[in-house]
Length: 574
Image (cartoon, rainbow, N blue to C red; front, side, top):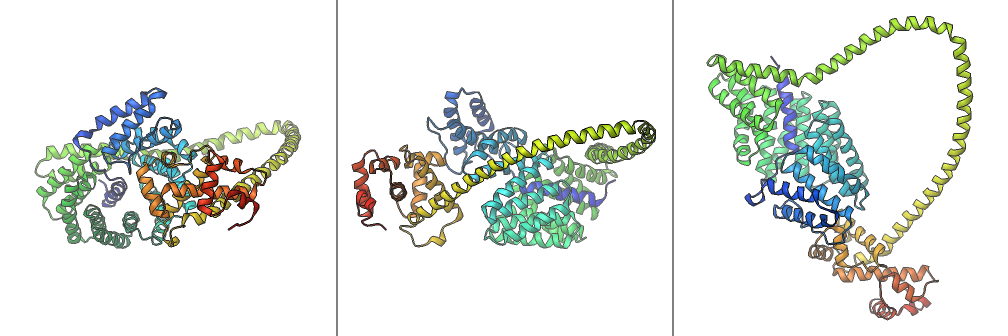
């Protein structure tokens, strides 16, 4: 027999999975999973010259399924790494969220991760790390999940975005809870709760409070678990999200059951179950049905209890959830043993099989400790024999040790010389990095007046908008000399459609993209004329992407009210 506490611990574990990894909305009949598999297989087998076309076909499917944030289409000539990174990442997202195939998703996400890390946008790498962490979490591979989540948190921490930081802290808390380390999970969830209060993202706050309820439930602090679950439920109601509110009711029920408040638990479950059934959230529904079965057994209503357990079992078998299947099996045994003992025996036999497999890992750990202890005793006996042998070779050992000390000393001198040389190289590299950072800062300061030329609300610009402007400025600076600093190339670099980018940039700057990009180029021209007296006006024009000097001069005068030659002579500078 397994204690009540064991089952409720399993409930916390599986509810955590349900909170973090809800099934996404099913695709329409025209977009069946077999269509995706066929398109992905076509992309995987495509020759280098055909991969762009195959990738576009896959993204048309994802766009039709409303899976991506915006349409993604690659033009011929798009760098191969860009196509591979985007395609592998989004295919992995689809495999995980829509097809529930974390193993295949891990393969593609790992392939995309090095390219994401090389990207100029750290958030792309963060998204890929988050996906890998979720996939390993789903498979119960806690160490790998935690490693990816910790790397993600460092990225979010450097960004200074409190919302993203609270999300990654919540993920770490969930991983340690799944790994049966609730005390470690508590450290992360406390920080996540504090960080989330710095934002106005009530959806994030609700998720984190729900996770806190799970963690405190696992720690046996049911009062705190109930408080956080109730606060999460109230937020979900304010946000008008009945699907999520049902999950919070399930968490409240777990706390009520552990506190012996059965009527309150039953009331919460009766509200949650119809909503979960309507949403198709079978995992959370099965857990609630098991809980309802427990409550009905306490009321001696074995018929209704067996019905509830049976429905939960059928759902759990379809999902392969062994933890909660064992709960259903034991419940059915207790409900049927008096009225249908033959059927009850089938369930208890299966329960015992599951119990053995579920505890194999824990048993292995205990055996490892025993073997280590037994091995130490054997080692002690062997050491007594070795001590007698050591006395005979003591002098030889001293001589060998002396020789080794001399060799180590020589190697140390060589190492120190090389270390000095490496230190000089590192110092030079650090100076170069400092110079690049200074240039980058000056570049942002130089273009700051352009960003808000037609706006007076600098403080209203979000961190996401600022990041987009920084990327646009850097892209323009790097590509103007090649004549690629235009809307079309910029949209391709950002993987956005031209129309979406035009609307976004106009709303941020108050100017058309063409005018804004032109001002960036002209501002660079002024900078070159200020700092590079050796360059002629023709040279400056070419470096800023103008084909001829006359076109450059006309444009410069139209924007700044002065010709380039007059500006270069210093007759009228801003």
